[in-house]
Length: 556
Image 1 (cartoon, rainbow, N blue to C red):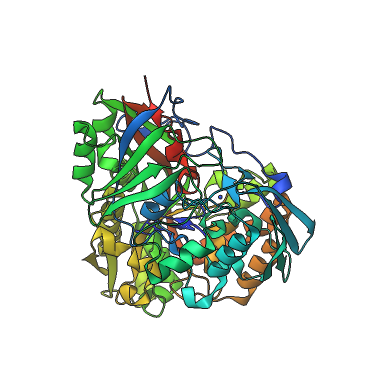
Image 2 (image 1 turned 90 degrees about the vertical axis):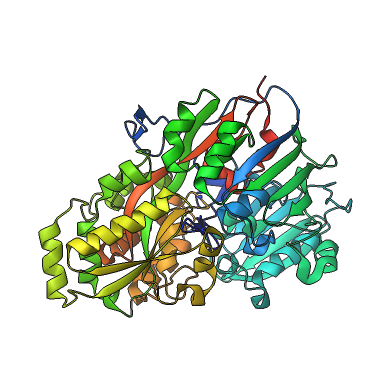
């Protein structure tokens, strides 16, 4: 699951995605390509016995509402935007702290706190800010606040989850009362896209400095969004209050309450009982119950998410490609999609989703997908590879968690696959709140060889995921290093034209697939449940960086 990656975007809890993630667009802001509403898993995938049809959105709200309650599977350790890399943090924070640009429910870019972004030369990005935007404390946003906020991401003392996205930034300067200019060492097609994620979030300089070390864990977040942070009852709930001084369209709900429900059954039961009105990241085992309950609607939308087996240690047996190939050959992907994803997914041999290639030509998409290794199971070949590698009887440890069946059943599937081919796979159970540490703390990964990872793109660009295998990358937990791969990442990053860039990314995809740097398993759409009382929430993964709660209101 993911999330803080230094880019994208992903559920850190074994589901990330960076940033996790951020995430998700095309290279230059002037040539962004909108994703089709039908992108994502092919029609015909089954969720509890019915065809999965992706919805572009839920019906618009008919009016205002006093409050609504939302389920989250874990409590955010902090709401500091610099480390907001996982699902729980961003699901809440996207409604409180806004960024220079905005990811839309259609997974395209539009202006956010910057009314305009321009690219006068390949190494310069100029952001002209909106006037009259107020922070939650009443102060007016200035260029100084933007310079300060982006500076926190670049400060090595902050250990920001998004720091990697600023690796080519040489300066962030105020060039007018409402203008900020970013200078790059070289062209960077990814940087302007990430300004729509938490990487581009803006908070009040005076507000953050006043909070000091407590920023993000208590008190005001000093941001500009349609909601401001209200009461945070540790371990139980986070309340957001409507900010009536918001510069944009005001939220339809006066209050949004996020209830922390770490047990999947408890989350489902709370939705069925009406204790909570809805939620994202629906436990896959509950798809059928919620769909058939008659109490609301279960929607599916584009998730830009792939389920993978993250290889975290290549110093041991998994350092041998034959062992990784054997596990991939033995893995029952179809069985996992049916049981672990409730049928709402599709088997894949790709680390990236097809929707992430929306900006590519048909020829480029074919190059990215047609040469990937097949997913057909071959136990005998897998056994032979294990024997050839001298790995028979070797022990490996897989992290698992009760977050949901997508995690626990994939861990079990890995164990079953390993056992069939002569490996000894041990499962290490980690609590949902602690699972996030796998993405941020090397010590938490000690003794773990693999863990289930649902990675979501934070931008609509395959490089969001593929750059994770560059030497020294934030989510390159196994320490993979290949100079040729690094060179391709640099080449792709430098190209603003989408199809030209994605032709290079197709080469990266082929390399990552052949080396099985992570083992791809399935594509997985976003799921959201709304009871009959509310409507308006987007169905896509955009909720990670779009103020979705402001759209939620009365269904009648």
